[in-house]
Image (cartoon, rainbow, N blue to C red; front, top):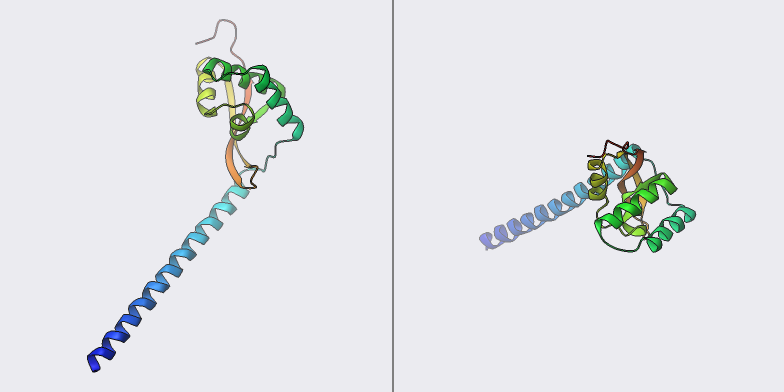
Length: 146
């Protein structure tokens, strides 16, 4: 009888310990999420896309339809000329550029000078994401294309 009581209390202790570990791990996850939110809010400004900018970028997609790298580069250069700054999310959603960092790298290899900065942008579903914003600083000079 005593062994049975010892076993049941030992089992209860194990269950209690496991439950407290689950609560501790959840608390750690929540704390990690809060730290991430504080860090992103403090380090990057919120940059919403204005309706006029979205309409202009979507118009460029209609003018330069296509998925080739050259067409994507043309759209991105036109977007820099029209909007000044284009975020990674805007390029993906409004310009139909699947991987904007690769297109920026293509332009840099071609001699364009492009600046970058971190911003926080909200998606259509309301989630804030830390993303890169690109700005065309200088085009290559006539004899300078690599």
